[in-house]
Length: 310
Ligand SMILES: Cc1cc2nc3c(=O)[nH]c(=O)nc-3n(C[C@H](O)[C@H](O)[C@H](O)COP(=O)(O)OP(=O)(O)OC[C@H]3O[C@@H](n4cnc5c(N)ncnc54)[C@H](O)[C@@H]3O)c2cc1C
Image 1: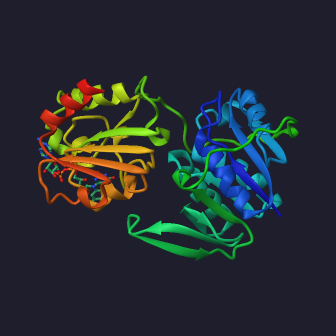
Image 2: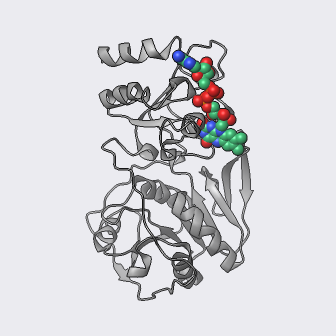
């Protein structure tokens, strides 16, 4: 039995979520092949070839794969599927697009967002916005799985000797959709999904201008900036900063929440953080139930003071 792990990358390097996916693949226990898909991604394939536990890297390099559209990605994975008992990918916006398509075309169920591997057939995954963990047994011949990266270790060793890299000649035809444009927010701060420190602001921050206080502390800490949905909906910050059930799932070493009440949908995205610090002027705010350190206070006094003392 062999597992196919579909790599997440930015066309030049593998993401840490791919390493977490590899840890999940190792726990399943099969031989592991890594599939690198994109345009000009030979260096990424080369990087994947040195990861411990990888038996072979498959590299599909073509114009049609440049933007990871669901149809060509799905067709490619289905083309390769017969050789694999497990097809897994880190849970991200691209895999949320193409993996259900793979499952549908293979006529099998999908096990989404697993947070633990119990055996090659049994997995744990969060349900009810993370308030309960379901144990799921998948009996389909091909198991299509997405992996919650924050639940798996990203510390993968490098092998001295690289495994073989095989070029995949199959070029899918993309006819249903086409790429129009990307609107990318440039930031010098760490990526929110993989940052080890996050400073988040909620509705209590009051305005987009006031978010400068959150950003100043984040910059002092070398942290990413996050936000609650209320802050995003109010237009204080862009929606790619949203943490929670319908935002990013994060598990940094340090999560600092300013003016965030702690609704379950927000907690669903950050409660696995190692150390949680909450500042809220309402001593009954639910965020204090998950906080390791809670401070009842006005964020407009606390934030500048913390930033100046660091
Ligand atoms: C289907 C669904 C999905 C959702 N997904 C998400 C999600 O992914 N992420 C998410 O965050 N939410 C999500 N929500 C929304 C969620 O239910 C809450 O509405 C939201 O998290 C509230 O954001 P908030 O804590 O910033 O705002 P509020 O609940 O309004 O809390 C603001 C807090 O700021 C405090 N405050 C105000 N002024 C100050 C001050 N000067 N100093 C200190 N504290 C102050 C207040 O005491 C209060 O606790 C979802 C909701 C639904 C229904």
